[in-house]
Length: 154
View 1: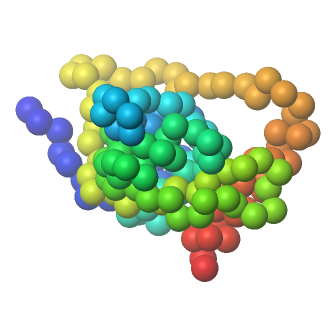
View 2: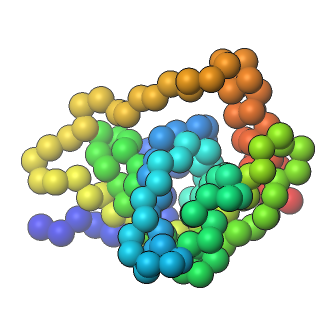
View 3: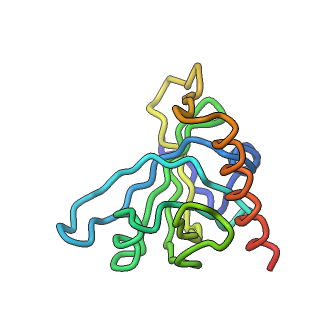
């Protein structure tokens, strides 16, 4: 039986994307036109139809989206794996007041699919640790999420 296709985030996904959360983004490479997958954590859903992503503005993700806006964001949540499809564009080339050169990407969702294989569930969500100074990481995370949330209300 085929899984139901949603046109926006379901509530458990929306809740997970209110703070830093591990995800992978698949883009189409701007040079080779082959799939390119990257891990990211600065993701934020301002509403059920959009997701903001903050990435280094030198990242291949940025150039890929400029040439090919179609993306798939994979998120593990709610004991399952979801593929969030849509078109993305560079909303801000360089986010102000952040020490890193980050671009803000806006993903407009076209569909959300539960892609977990039949008869299984995720028993433990992915976890990661910052490998640099904890205080610096917390400060940077706060700056990035403040910028994404401020953009959402502007």
